[in-house]
Amino acid sequence: MTTARGSTREAIVTAALDLFRERGFEGTTMRAVAERAGVSVGNAYYYFSSKDELVQGFYDQLVAEHRALALPGLAERTDLADRLGATLHAWVTVAEPYREFAGRFFAVAAQPDNPLSPFSPETGPARAAAVDLYREVLAGARVEPDPELARELPELLWLQHLGVVLFWVHDRSDGAARTRMLVDRTAPIVARLVRLSRLPVLRPLGRQVVDLVRLLRG
Amino acid sequence: MTTARGSTREAIVTAALDLFRERGFEGTTMRAVAERAGVSVGNAYYYFSSKDELVQGFYDQLVAEHRALALPGLAERTDLADRLGATLHAWVTVAEPYREFAGRFFAVAAQPDNPLSPFSPETGPARAAAVDLYREVLAGARVEPDPELARELPELLWLQHLGVVLFWVHDRSDGAARTRMLVDRTAPIVARLVRLSRLPVLRPLGRQVVDLVRLLRG
Image (tube, rainbow over all chains, first blue to last red; front, side, top):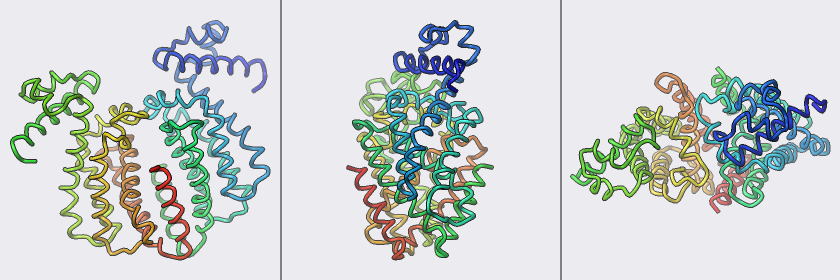
């Protein structure tokens, strides 16, 4: 991704994000993006066939940056609550420059059937990469959840991540302080639930959650 | 609410919803709403000073209809999972005619700081009425949750209700079948968590959740 090709691609995404911030998503044209990135319009279209694809490129870039920032923190932590917290804080740090844009963009992306929604087929690759990161969060933790639940946990943790994103989009506090507080408080709750999932009294609950996730995935 | 005053108010809200469906929220004027409702523009403004207030009127009406449909079902159920399920199904039934409108309207209402968001000061009365219904759902159930948690439970159940609404807005299945499946699956999970909240092993979890809710309320 750091080849010349990768950097042209990144330059186009960066230019697009600058323009989305300045003029909004609707008010930005591919021509303006190409101009800002210093490439020809044909070259911009070579990388991204539409504005929607540009946003997919942004998603991919955000996931990659998130991963790069989270991994060093994960290397030095084995407690699940700490690992979850570090991963979510890394996301807030990486996403913070886009919070205002996200607030306005959310109205587009959250619409049913929009290709930019986190559940669409088009965002599949970015979603898979994000779920993978949570798979690593679990793999390096000293924790043995109920085995049936364990299979669905990376996806469940990604859903929790989406909940944090939803909160963050609406968070108007300085430096996303309220989101960071939410992270500090929810990571231990989730870690405790995972740890307790092996208890006989809670195992049926875990199975109900697993059934639900599988049914919804269809 | 069934006085002449009440019915003029309802007629205006009904006319507004018809027009929102036909022309969208942005494309609807107070003049057109008054015309459709068969009242003077001045009369429409007497009840609602803006389109936002009309939507608040819609929220109030939806909560009242939800309550009216849910109560008979609650009268014949004592199991918490059944009571939760019946209440959520009643909401889906009442809201179903507005699902398509809600999908497009969601983009407006979900924006940060919008007075039509479910967390805004303006929607306070509709929110309080909805939380009250969940207070009754709990009061009539054979269940004794952890007392500390019990105080926050009506609000927590309303948050779960919002999660169902968020899913429903994105649900494209016939008759909201997927939302109804979600309700059938989540009501027993939530009821089980409430029931287990008294167990010593789970009590700290309940306290963590209570602390979080109180912190977020600020």
